[in-house]
Length: 549
Image (cartoon, rainbow, N blue to C red):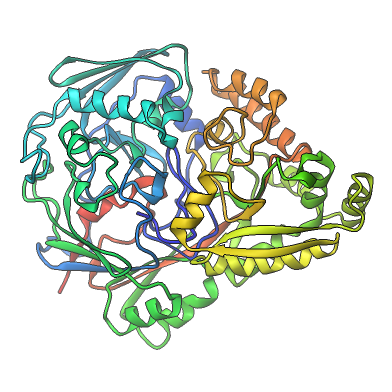
């Protein structure tokens, strides 16, 4: 469950933005998209992660980890809106994402890809659902995997886009799942590891229906969600029947909702919380650590694409020249400074993240296509008939204070081409509802991104994508996407994806701007919390955390 604003980038789908805080704990500093694609083409296999090396000889069992975060979950339907709702504390996937964008086994003990359209998974034996009604601790089987994937592709969730190439998914025996595709689909291997594909039991859905009730959050994971008090706390307790021997170490986790960023910092310094989840705004970091040696801090560049999106059905934005003018009128480096509090507050990027080299454009080429050119912007506005400008409502996340700071800069920048920006901040749940129902003229925060670099385009910018929030009709981009999404040669595919990036700069469907920097802080007695956590992991690593006190 992510907090307001920094809607964590994900492995298959994840909302992304320049957020204020994020229970998914920030981005991964390194990663290689080429390796990711190679993994999908070869015959990948993995083993569930064992506890990492610790700073003390033996991890201690017990205690409750208190985490301060900015907002209550928008929904408990974990397939609904990506990293906002995925919960690796409660659910397991077939695969899971480790630091460095490495896929390893989770519920799958091993797997193989005998050809580009076939995936076969061998499940762990003896994995049990949590011992609460209606599943009552029964063993997980291959039928549960089949049910989960079928539900994802048939319901009106964003997850359905993951399975557009799916032909069949069958349980060939109680511990084997075979998935076949209609055609090669390059991102598929990562879809099995995204946090929104946490495995469900049919009985839970039959009892609760839409799964918006927190009591419906029942899985096979290391922690059990036992209580949820709106705008106060979400409480987890240790799952005594968890399949990884000896884990988790903690007795529980209290996710404490503290909307105000300064109040969260004070709570950490005073010892009221043990962990302060990812905060944008590096200028705030000094306050958290000032005058104390008891707090550790980790800094990372998020795997997010933050920027400016607009409805193509809104009259001015029907004209490509207006969209181009907006792109030329903005200074992305100024956005970084505003959102992050310094020049180190983020990194100016394109739609494909620099972590995804060689799929992303070079830094030099990105600088050229993202250039600030007010003269050209004004010329385009005049040619489109908007020399006198227009008023524009920009929807934003009210809980994303860093994003609101950046929006103030946008307001100043677009005023230079006579666009009068009216900020429209919304509470998180309302923001999500308006975004997914396309009830906005424009918005600033971010858009769903996909770990597989070509999946970014396939899932967000193409005409028929369920995440085409901007109602863009882009047949040329659709044709380019149709080639890259089935291409299994990583070098050829990288070239196709770079061409799509270039196309989006010339014909803006949306305007990428930066990946925010952020920091996470924790008391020194919290062990194995630090280090790089992939944003889409949805906190499965909390099973490895222990308290040295």
